[in-house]
Image (tube, rainbow, N blue to C red; front, side, top):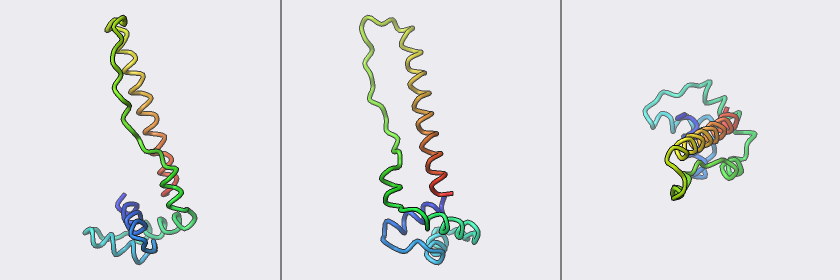
Length: 104
């Protein structure tokens, strides 16, 4: 993950995302860079417009709290909460899958 963070940091600072700069950032973070991972990431990012990828990335948000209806018994509310949690988990998994294809 630190390699992706380094690439995003370089991009944010308008620096060229290349092997040399990635290695410098990784070393500055106190980690010895892995040549294979650096080359793979630079290769993968060479085909991607990072600005467009960030704009289209799914950003998980917290759903607003829903007040219980006065006529609904408490037993019916519990299953609804579980369904909402499952939907949020699926959305989060889908967004992580999209990011994994984006950065290798």
